[in-house]
Image (cartoon, rainbow, N blue to C red; front, side, top):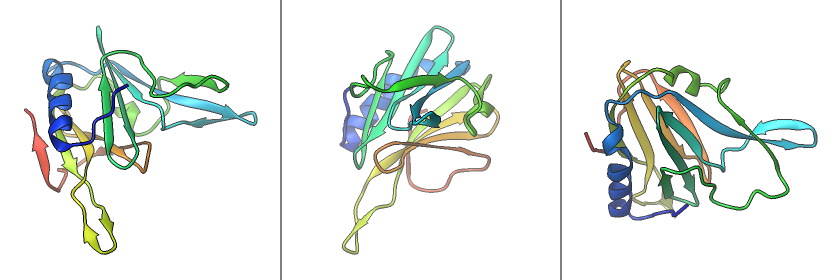
Length: 161
């Protein structure tokens, strides 16, 4: 996966990745689980795979604000030595996105300060759905974070549709 950091690169990546998916139904997701000492845990360092009939998107955040989106089933690093499984259901809030249609996509500005100075950082990807909800895939400090917003999302955003 190729990660991009600048706002301009992110805008281009999101536009090119999602433009043909507006109006398409989300048919599923896959999120990684890893087995450690006999226990399974979600592994948010790996991409989430979103399915749309014959299309697939792999979305992954890393580092402080780097985003990668691919139309192929790729991983950002070698997982040899790990026991993985891919969950296709059972993870809130993602179970509520089945059968919804994408109506908009936007990048959102995150909050970050260093030594009391605010730093501009775009670390929130919003996927607007036809049921009035918004799926957010955000940078949760070097891994993916997820939130399904029931109401209008506040904050500065670049909307693409």
